[in-house]
Length: 96
Image (tube, rainbow, N blue to C red; front, top):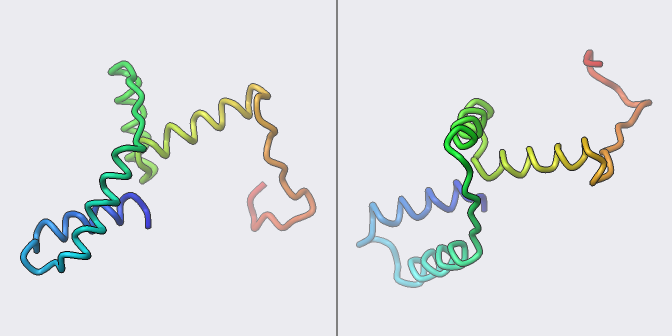
């Protein structure tokens, strides 16, 4: 279950709290607590935050997904991670 799916499940449960069975509500709350315990945050300056949020919105990704992508690309570009190998003999479907 993705983070967005989980957030939607929490919203739905909150909107229909009287109809949600107690065991289901307990599961949702435990998952939320676990996610909060494991969540880390990075404080960035305002300009960087705005740029990341703008790009993430444009690409339909979350802020955290965008940060992970940027870090991975930087690590590969600067030879801290091996570059992903492309299949040179594979089909390109009209793209080089």
